Image (cartoon, rainbow, N blue to C red; front, side, top):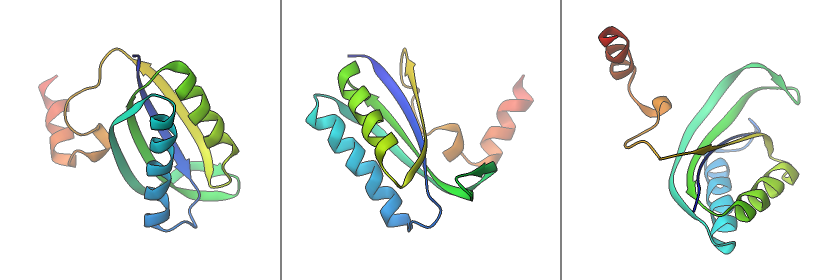
Length: 117
């Protein structure tokens, strides 16, 4: 099955638990349609570069999935219809990188990568 990475932003007035429950909800949608969530990360409440739906901040979540295209389309459709989700981005990837995403790595680790170049 194809591999995908999804990032979505939910409204700032949700609690952390509610934002994390959205990740579980959309993971179950994938599972119901024959896919699976390989890894998920909750990036927290972050300030956005510009306002989206009159919100300056949003809860960011990241999913690594292994799912057929119809399952991904259904999940995206439900994300776009959900009132709490403001933005969705899905990318098809060849393979999932090992370890945490760049957003979850410590700042020192990211700075060390720049120095090596």
